[in-house]
Image (cartoon, rainbow, N blue to C red; front, side, top):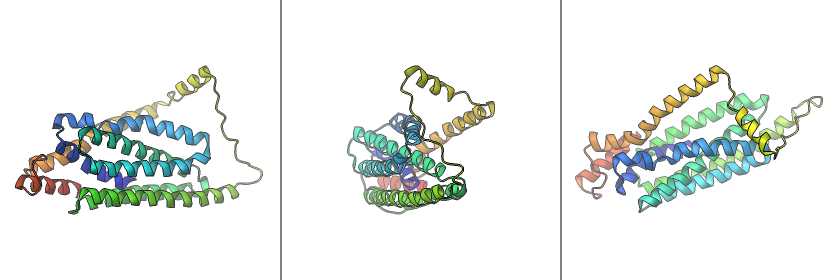
Length: 261
């Protein structure tokens, strides 16, 4: 998942610029990431918390959706298609992220520390691979296909391993301490509203943490959207709309690879 995120981070702005999107409008075109993050992750997490059987299938569905969006992005010929590809890609990516966290949380105390360590290592390794291959002189199409295949295979392997560890965690439970029953969903609208509002009643330290996270992502988003364009255009002197093979076109492509590395 994070390999695909790294490829998208580096490639999305150049793709949009080559299709004619002005620099000042790139941020609007890339709003799919934060919007789907704010909507899809909580919704997917709630669905998976309500039913443990949904976690692994949603992980695989999210990975396939992510892979399809990534390949579609590399083949887009219009701005509208590129924006649609980003929405598909980011929606799938956020489902995968939510499913990964739910799977780790379901491993139980015996395997949870190991699961968190594995997830953190996978995030770092995925970003390293994604940015690394993005710096190689490969065509965007083949790069996206390769990463998409790796994402789907990784999701299948993760789902299989999670099933085994969850079974081991279940057998490790003491007979005197049976697992709690699955939560029931109250369909009463007022009760649902009350529960939803209760989620915002958090301690002061958590509000401070949320504020710091918001500010850090505000700066990080600007970096994600504009760094590649700045290096390719201002540092290397390239032009996103220049034809391939021209000096300006080659300079822009070199700058994109440099930004990824």
